Image (tube, rainbow, N blue to C red):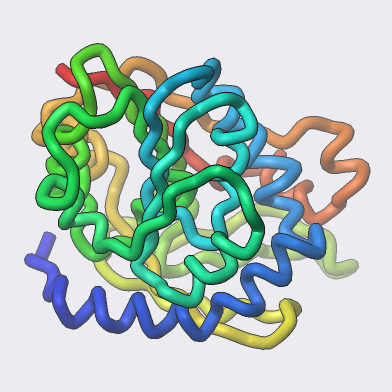
Length: 256
């Protein structure tokens, strides 16, 4: 995998998320984001388990959804994001949470070693240009016996080329994917929100992710490919796609 130009990429990511923040936060507040509230969010909450009394770091918190969920379950939460505008929305939503503007790669410089019992990253690591460096930094600040619970877009289906194939009546038949081994930035345009916006994610293979986890000093305790519950699909038919193919991958990691 080519070495990322992290300074340039980080500036672009910050600008994109600052632009997206108002629409993104509105989508969460309005309940439009059914994937977050009825699918991968509950799945990651369940995988994270009991956080009562834990010191918890939420990585790439965005508008604060997962940080608030963890605080509501009794964790003492510190959360950070690269985007100042996202953090404005997170703080405005309330909650006893310490929000910081921070680049994830700088975590080990910002916090003392072994500062956190639990680290969470809800759909944020794939948006970072160098996840390997981020995982190494997170390993420094997690306590012995701690846990890192992260969700990402599934590498096997979030490929640079991805398109649903349909029958003559428009019904989805199968997901066509391509360029699985082409690593790097993939730009996505989000339509149907308050306004149109772009984001960038960084595609990597499953083997890349498992190698980064190992090299950072984590052990894989559990792996989850969540599928939406039937009741969620009945209430939000757009989730039916994720019954057919795995959209998300979740890791429960422990310091090795």
